[in-house]
Image (cartoon, protein in one colour):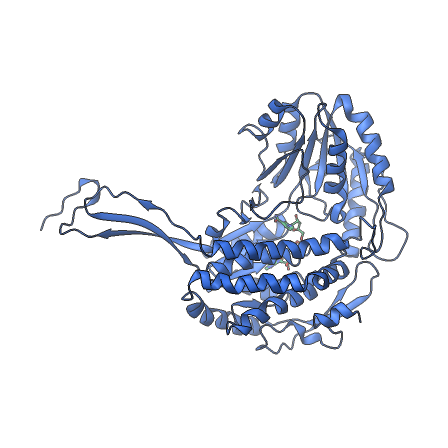
Length: 504
Ligand code: NAD
């Protein structure tokens, strides 16, 4: 067993690691967590039952009643220490992410850095949960709005950001005065356990066990129990559009709130005026980074016809030089897909591409070695091919040619998803056109930067089938709070609004 696993308290002989803040002794079935690089089992996790979930949510509700009374800046102080704890464990947590989901080392550690950044941001936010004041139309009246915490927040996370997606939610939710229950992906449960332990230890030290809670369980029982639970006023769910559509409908059925961060089908447009060296790097990182398993991965590339031939040739050559292998080794830029199912999905997509007339320029097959490795793939395609409209969570890039920028933008927008988009251009007019209200319809629109690798200071999320949610910076904290509009009368009269009279 590797040292970093021991330091994080993950032992193969300790399958009960799924217990939450130490007060639930889970008895459920064991599920192995597998290293996608080798196919070896790292450790097993014992799943929680619906009864365990029930105990946890009751505790989270009890603690909420007290936690919300702690002044927000004091909550922020605890989050500052959480940031320190994450900094201290950054290398080990990063190594675990590399081991469990196959991210290369710099991306595994980068993900933990994102959580650190979120903790720092939440410290500041804890002093800035500001409401507006309004002028009342009535004399001697004052109007203002204030923001209160919601209660117990349910956090569902995807496998591909097993540490940071939780932190996007958890740091802000905690600063806002909520308690929470995290239900992570079963494909990344060890990272969830380690992350929870590192952060919860800080809360425990300050007597605030039960603010952060972890429940590792099956979607069909624990997942369904959580999304249907009226004691959980907000479900923040990150994952596929298929999952989000279901979760969104169930939560809407009980008039709860949902924050949905779902699939993308992100495109880059490269103009003839673009710095092509810059564009090449932006496209390669966007499409191949994280083995194409980011919600913001570049999946479609629109090249101006005048540069398409040469640019494609250079891109194919760059793809064929990409070092693929054990993601913990230095110099490796692409690791494995998450598991064998993902490889099967990739192979099915390749077969469909061929059926629909796509021309595979490079890649298109799995690597001949142990683990879930595939070759990054470039496809010369037509935007009307139905497969190009789907998100295949793998490194497959569709390349199209265009003549007019407006046509490229229209085709970029002509998919169900609306997460991230980018243009590479040196034309001010093209850049502004892309960013205008008739330009990109995505939640994220970049110029001379690829589609992936967002900073946490901005609000992150997308439109249409991406779910409409916003997380991380800007005013995203409002999703975790309820707004209250207050009107105070300090006069001796009781005037009614809109001039209504009711004299008795
Ligand atoms: P997934 O939809 O298979 O699973 C996501 C999570 O939902 C998992 O934790 C799963 O256990 C849970 N889940 C599924 N059904 C549930 C139910 N009925 N009740 C409660 N929970 C349930 O997605 P995945 O394969 O883990 O992740 C990849 C997907 O996530 C891609 O589509 C990717 O684009 C998307 N993603 C989006 C963002 C974003 O911010 N927009 C970020 C990361 C990943």
